[in-house]
Length: 93
Image (cartoon, rainbow, N blue to C red; front, side):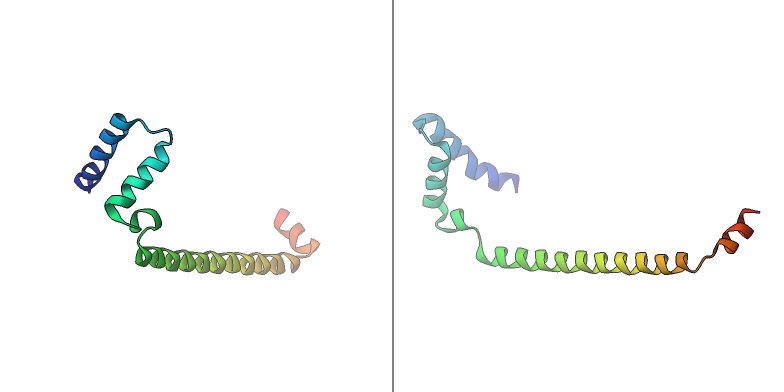
């Protein structure tokens, strides 16, 4: 992967040094778009779809974890409400 990145960045950096554009970002985006097409600007649509599915799955997991945490807290509250002063004094002695 490093070879792929170097293959892309080395010529780009050379052009940046040689041309010294006012807007480095615009220059880089234009060059990448020229070399790789719209994919350089917008990314790979299938990759984006896959990542959005992962985000949705992770959000569902977080919601489930939050729901389980709430259920456990409610159960603990119910158990603690069942204690009486007498139960506590027996434990303390």
